[in-house]
Image (cartoon, rainbow, N blue to C red):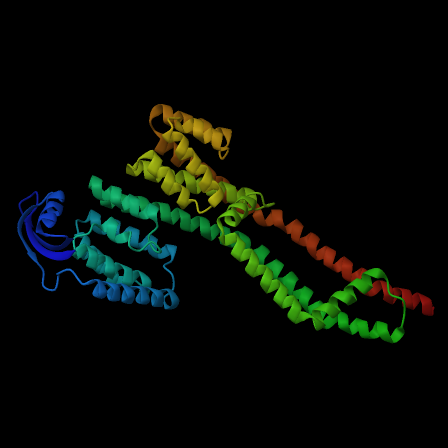
Length: 419
């Protein structure tokens, strides 16, 4: 593989210069013709001859080492950065700015070091003749497959500005949903953390004080008090074992969840969790419908769209169901039938999918379904705190009751005995 510098005439007759990677001049000419341009001159660029395997290996190793350093040092690209990138690219493409110039400009103004590095690499690949979608695909940790596919469709249809607008709207909605979920879970997380901290403090500092008093009095202690004292003694004297057990459990569970079977079970369990399971289920359905609608609206074939949507939902259980839908569609079944067999959708949603398939407006009605689910999620998130509060109050009440029975009952017994 060598790098060639070329001059070519585009459809309007303007002279275009650039670089392209190809096996030889004939392959380079074919690639240029494939871009609807007529080659005028093709020459091997300076230093563009094929590198020896050793040099390639060295360069690849340097690139991998640099990528590893970026992973360790630079923070990850946030969803907000992708939204800004999509919005800016939409504006620049709509204004008629060349892609290479737009990417270089965004690389200079980006506030994310990782995004800046990626955009500079994308710019370099564009100069070598690669398409934007191909260049974006080289950075899967930043641009997921759905993002790349929409850009690819926009390139092929000549509507790259509309593709970035669709991506911006989709990512903005995803960002808003994540903020709502984070806001709704902040209070329960804080309360649970406070309960755990109170439990540790009582076992380490409070209960041992009463233990000393009970030992001096030498009274017979009720079973609840003995349980509390035993638990406190374990906390104080066996805390290294406790820490090791908790750390080991977390490690083993985390390792199991990373396996295919473990992730499938965990993702399925999350949808059945009390109080929050229904919220997660509706949120995933909203993401599925909006992603699927986005792909169909962009012109991606239905089977490919289902494949990409299975990855976009970020839940292996739902993703497996979606892949099953794709396989059944490939066998000739209708979308309505496979959606019904999946068991993922409510009857109301099934009716909308059926009407969309009959009228040829599946993408439009899927957008309606996504908005319906998103409204449901908004309502559920606003009422989530009120649903969880009774559970948290019950936990706190149980802790107070146990302490009252374990600490104050023997004290009352001793006072009555002295009287």
